[in-house]
Image 1 (cartoon, rainbow, N blue to C red):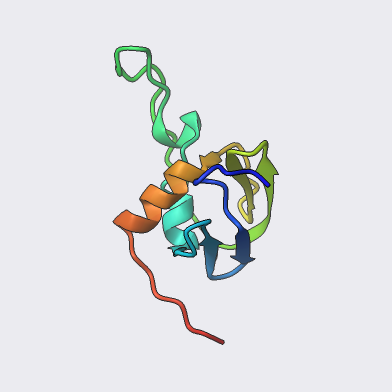
Image 2: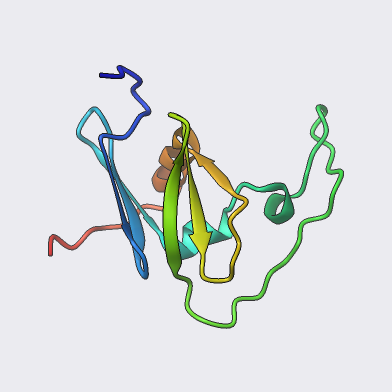
Length: 113
């Protein structure tokens, strides 16, 4: 078993609502899909930066014509998750560290249904 404290023990994607992650310390992070899509870490969404932090490529603003839904997700190695969105966007790779930070910055609650 991997002893990486950032490797989730469970990931549950509710495709029209949220992402739920259980961590090795038994804590759970919940991130709404709206927050997850808004903070996509890819260069197209956040802008590409050089080593000094200067922005090289402008941020591409996307309009959402319908509800934010996830079509699916896949693990990227042992460090990240990639989400395929209903707007066909799929280039964002969300590291587990980044997901934990997003959850802390944008707290959500879970219904236990």
